[in-house]
Length: 200
Image (cartoon, rainbow, N blue to C red; front, top):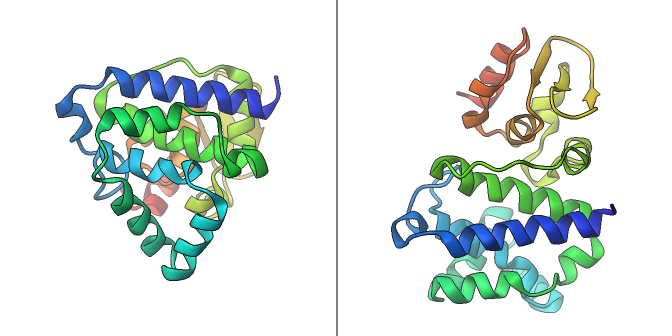
């Protein structure tokens, strides 16, 4: 299976999840600091705007935080059903030009929603290997990866040298993104160091 197909399936699972949420769950806190579930979904609308529109917004908001805030604010007024319908459309420029990055970004934000709501799922091992090998660069994963040995218990994947961080692939990907919520699912003598880096 290629990465574009994985991205299509990842987005399909996200859309299915979002269609099942209650009004209260849309307002629940996500793993993204300061963002509700609704805010995360607004952020994921990036690929539903044209590339020229996105670039113009980026020029007007010359920092990642300002750009994210501007995009979230743009989509906040939309009803939840419309937000989901937009995500259900075929991928745009982001998916077309950088499918691995789009997959990583969609995955981590889907888990940002799922974990606080207790909506677990089984992620295929093949997809986990791609995600583990290509963590989302927007979250600067190098600061968490460096100097540690990472091993997945449910996929044929490992990397690095040093104290061990071991656990389910999903938890490893979430930890690489600096989410403290995944730490209790991990084991190994490198976990205390990782916990310190994350600031948990």
